[in-house]
Image (cartoon, rainbow, N blue to C red; front, side):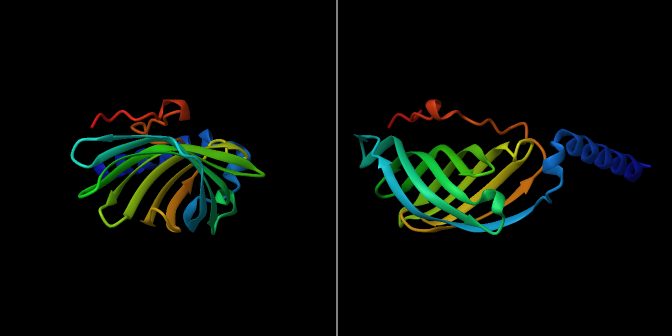
Length: 179
């Protein structure tokens, strides 16, 4: 009896999610995505403030990069608002806003990361699709040295973001950390 209820719940959830995505988006399959982020250029330096114990905060630095994946929907120009709070002997925390843009639409989302003392970085980003990607979401993990090319992997799917994910607009990404 319990397994029947679980199957009914799973089937009902799948039906609701399928109905929530636009018809054009449903024609494309959900799937795993692998790629790279390359060629990042700093467009705007942002503002850096130093603090105690070899700490510093940089806010509102703007980067432009190129994203290349095995899913055409996620290829294109990547714009980032980059914020970081770091300690020279520990590492850093990072957060910000990102937009992946191509001829069929764009993805916007929030991201956060940690950087080890040696520069190894892990980023988790959540995106919402617009244009041809309306009704789609993308969750991405990036890893590698924060100043070099980073490998990416993720999942693109035709449904909304989980309820605990709140996308922060770019104008609200200013540093909430006080060192």
